[in-house]
Image (cartoon, rainbow, N blue to C red; front, side, top):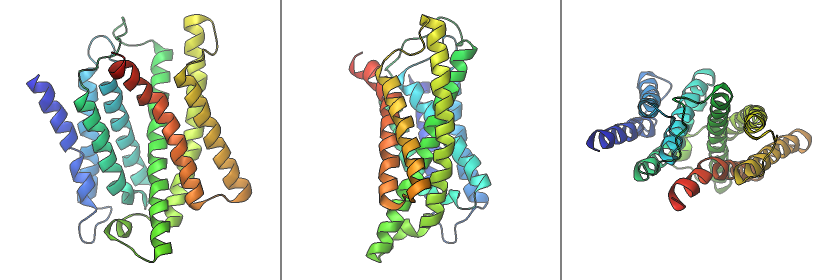
Length: 266
């Protein structure tokens, strides 16, 4: 129990520097930022890897740690390829800390364990695609929130310490769109691999469930938003709200279903 708690504590604390590093005077994509970002990836990743021993752990806490680790890894990659993405850290890191605390609180909620030491290739692929999808949409939702906050600050002609750190509206919206496109592609792949796994298990392509229905709805909502942006230039608060709705749907489909089955119904 104590080693497990210390591992939880270390993983949560590893995210704190990233939440604070951009508050420094003249902060930038410099050494302290990269150290904080690398630490924020390593902490949750090591925690998640430590639980992949023996039968595959499908519990709520494991799902949260994997989601946090993948989201932070994708953020680090995004910060490497985009000059403005690092500015999302003050929104992303506190949210990741919140998800980590949920994993700590419900670390006892163990889901069903698969009988094999690791899932077969199709299931592994489906799990990997699913968590990458959730990580990409997490970053897109954070970028949408940044655009929303910046636009509101501009309309009110009142900036604060947070909006001074966040990316400008145009940069936030650009990140949001690119991440949405990537999310739509990977989510489509996830739906295909999910159908493949379902077919291998039951000889049926689609089995109606909350997770499947919510995932398909998220796919449709994201596709509709991208089409609206392409044809009618949908942007600003309206686009941010649609992104957050899509994120809510995918959250309900992935960790939400896990929470209900492993915590509420356990």
